[in-house]
Image (tube, rainbow, N blue to C red; front, side):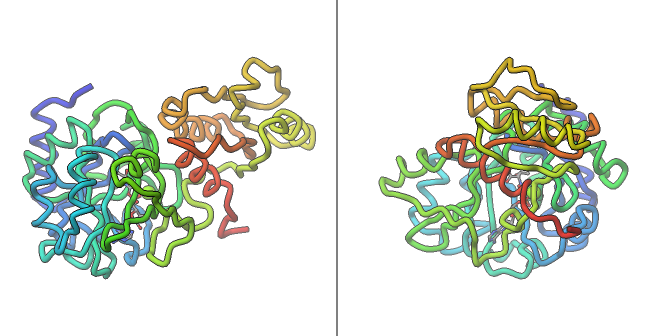
Length: 325
Ligand code: TXA
Ligand code: MG
């Protein structure tokens, strides 16, 4: 689905006027503001309920603009940009002068990406500048993968929602710290570690706990309302039925190897066998189980290779300890 030209013009106008636009990317929907407008960027933090010390990603229209937004870009970073942009890869680099500290949470580094979505690229072309955008959800909750998710969660707090249909990747971009000679993964995502390693020609470190401020690395992020419990795949059915018997409204993410099993639970979602389909559906499944009134979700981790690494990362964060508990 592609948004109408008039909608793209309207969205670009809203950005120019200092407003907020929710827009589709191939990963998840973003909550965008003119990256060079500190007041607009401040509103993004306010609407999201996100502490202003947590940096945003600056979305740009093409790799050739990288020099405007980042400084001292290492050759390795250029190689990754050339190979994976437009696409679900975010590069952390030295902050260029065009990027206000408000967008980077005060850091001297900046996260940049060129999204692989025709509507996002059309918006960036029409707007002409960089768009600072986190995922268009409230801080800590599940990222939106449809325009309806955005409207349901943020409503009137956004000036314009640009509808580009459901996101095709479904999990956020892979964040690579590319400031030095040895890049490392700060957050697994839509570009797989294996694909990155194939281009770099060497193994890549994946930091599960980072010294940099990455909210996605905190416990209980990407979390639905319902509590999430992770067990071995072969224990999912028994765990779900026990919890249901104990009085919970249990939602189940049923692993593919158990597809078709009868489960005595409140709601069951059969997890697709393809990792690409699972990633695409994951946040929608979690939202659906919330909506159906589940207070507990029982799930298992996929094998942590390919997109399975990002899915497992998000499920672990969803199952992490809650601040209120
Ligand atoms: O796929 C995505 O990346 C989506 C779409 C909208 O582009 N965006 C997204 O943004 O997931 P957000 O804000 O929800 O997550 C971006 C992550 C945050 O965890 C943030 O801390 C990290 O990027 N980040 C941003 N700037 C950084 C920096 N300079 N150093 C380290 N991490 C940074
Ligand atoms: Mg987010």
